[in-house]
Length: 273
Image 1 (cartoon, rainbow, N blue to C red):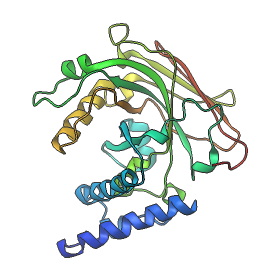
Image 2 (tube, one colour):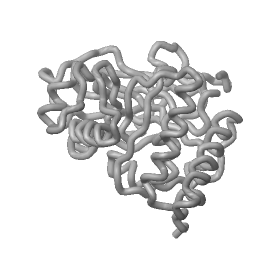
Image 3 (cartoon, rainbow, N blue to C red):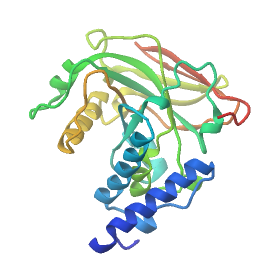
Image 4 (cartoon, rainbow, N blue to C red):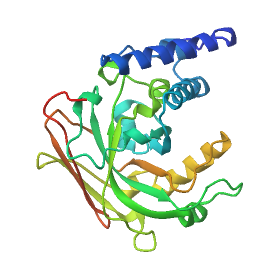
């Protein structure tokens, strides 16, 4: 197991890991894992890198529009060799729902996950958060495709690598059918995802931490404890309903989620940014 840095090395480790990940994103060339700097299990240190990258994005003019929960599906956890959820930040330029074609050049190693996205109608900053409280805070839900990405070469990641790398976030697409939670139960949905009309992934609501609302509750509690509670108007990608799949340039991805309809994304054939 990689040795976790001592306290005197932590600041340097944060800087070096952030620089490595930023360089990979800027140059379009995946980098080596950052767990050699952070250790295999130091979540506090990994989130410190994520926070450093977030501050840099905000300083460059980006705006936070929500959060994503990652590693909620046992199938995805098995794919990546981890055993717990994580979260990342959604920035305004990550929403490509309005684009007719996804610019493949903005991605290094794209994969797609089908998810339920919750759009909040109220803040989630109370001390007594529960499933009922988070349910009441949801304005509506939509079908979503999260285009996950990794700055780490060959997706050779462990939990500290993905947490530091903003939970392997890339882009996302929201469906157009807005459904209030009074009209369906997230735990009961079924999902089918296709790439170029080939069925490549199937899943269901219970695959997401037992219920996508459990993922929302976990995120609400975690972000509140960190002093950055979820706010009204924010989008929450609640986690994969089934295995993620590679999305090569030129591919067309379509996900069908019961009660929420269809969401699609077509990737540019060329490496356009």
